[in-house]
Structures are given as structure tokens and as C-alpha cells.
Length: 409
Image (tube, rainbow, N blue to C red; front, top):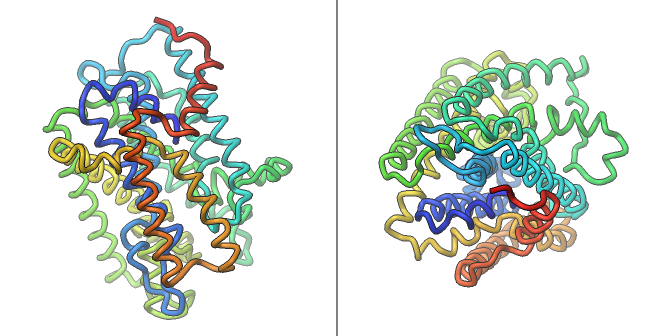
């Protein structure tokens, strides 16, 4: 997460568009806080909550897509006609060192932060590995990156579906996985850890480069142009509506819901799971799984829908900051220090989760979410006014720059 902040700071003087990128990231951060504090489905009825309906699957996808945008900006942004900026081999190697060191720090931090009892599927280890996977793509143009992103969206759900069914034993039990966020102790079982990271865990890295590569392709565009911003907004909205509509038709007309009904406690629970992303075994084994836009499932429609939503949010925020720059300053400031705020809210959640012993509900969850949002926006405003990096962003920046050595001219 921290890898995007230095690029944002270095280039912020060149245009307001980066405030829009940061504001979009801030919205993703608040959305993730919401689903971490408010249950995605209401206990008892199983119906999807407002947090599950709005943010489940979409916030994490927006984070990953914006990570790609940040990597593209960090390495020079848009070149001529969508080409990558021309760098010498020495400078390109320097960028790779900076990103690799920062990725290693994020992975290490994630392995320890996951020891907290926060009730959260911590994304940091996956996030850091994504940055490492991005290293071969740093010098590609927008067209080349779009080609790779399209291929990943097309092929990865098929590979994921095949691997999930290959790994699932005949007893119909879930495939082998950690069943918790990757921790430092899991390094003792590297095989299971790798399987969890890439296939069976919370954020399968077989799938998630689709978001990163899409973001990198967008970062090679001239995001400061209003025409580009408007196209992103309209294309994202169109894709989100189309994919949701196709999924609704499949669920209503195909009979897949009837085949899934025995696995749910009620019709409301089944619908809530479809909308908020609970994992149902039939969704992976059923042939129509590819056409279900259920969050966190990794089907074709899930990837296309969440990518479309992320693109729409990015376009919207880039447009809004043209007219509402300072009103959006707290949100943009929060989005420019995501690593600090993400880790900070996990630390805050730990004692509440230990005391409650279950997902936070009622006034406890609602009040806590309100305070987390207020604190994040206040920290974002202070960050903007002081023009300083967040604490963890400053740490990862300084260490990665020192490890990479002087920046080539």
C-alpha cells in the first residue's frame, strides 16, 4: 500500500488528478473499514447488510487496482500515446529495487500484523506479493498492459475453477488452506502457505493480478484530461450495470439458485451470501459459476463487475477533485497514507474483537465505525496540511530508497 504514496507526493504538483487517485484510495480504505466492523450479513436473518451490499469485494478490488495505478505513476506515469516513459536500464533497475524492497517490508509487516485478533482477512502479505509479481510489467505501455489484463481476466477464473475442484477432495470438504491470514509462523509450512496465497486463501493471487495490471494500464493514460476521466466514469458505470444485470438474469432464469438452496439456511441467507460474498461450495462446482458476480468468488463476472466499479470510482473522484479539491482533502489525505491507517485500524479493532468474541454488531460496531472514519479523515486532513508522509509510508520510503541507492539521472 505504501508504494503508491511516494509517487503521489512526487507528482502532486503536476496536477489535481493525483488528488483524485488518493481520494479514490481513501474511499476504498473507508469501505474496507466498514466491512471489517459491520457484518456483511446480519446475524440471524442472513440478509446482506448495507456494508456488504456497498463494499464487500469492491473495496479490496479498488485497493488493488489503485495499487497498479500507483506503480505506473511511480515509474513515470503516461508517456506519449500511452507508452511507458523512457528510462535507462539503470533507472528501470532502480525502480525495481525500490518496489521490491518496499514489497518485502509490506509482506513482513503483514506476517506480524496478522497475529492481531482483529477478525480481519489481512491483505498485506498478498499485496506485497502482488508488487513483486508486477516487476516484469513496469516498462510496458498502456496497450501491452491492457492486453495482459484482458488475458488475465479471461484465463485466471478458468484456472482458479480447475485448481479449486482439483484440490477439493471427494468428501466435498473445502480445499487445503490456512483458514487465517498468513502469519509469521506459517513460514514453517511453505507449501501450504503458497497454496493459500495463490489458490485457496482469502485473496487468491492466481486472480488478483487482473486488478493490478488493469490499474497499471490506467496509470499509463493521461488521467489529468477531463475526457479520459469521463470515459473512465462512463465505461465503469456501464460495465458495472451490465455485469450485474447478466448475473441477475442467470440467477433468476437458470435454476442455479435452486441447486444452491440446500446449502443455505433460508432464501434470505442465500441471497445475502450472493450479495455479500460468503463462500458456497456449489458456486465453484456449478458450471454457471463463471456467470455469478458474487463478491470474492473470482468468477469472470466477479472480476469484470468489481473492475468496472473500481474504474467508475476512479473516474468519478478524478472529476470531483476538479471542483471540490479542498472539501475532498481529508479523504485524499487518508488515501495517501493507506498503510498507516490500515495497520492502525487493525490495532484498534484487536481489543474490541477480543472483548466481543464475535463480529461487532449493534451500536458497538456502528459507533466504532463512525469513530474510525472520523479519525481517518482527521488524520488525512493533518497529513495534507503538514505535507508529510504517513509514519509507515515514511519508514518504507526511506528504507527502500536507502537500499536501492542513489537514483540514476
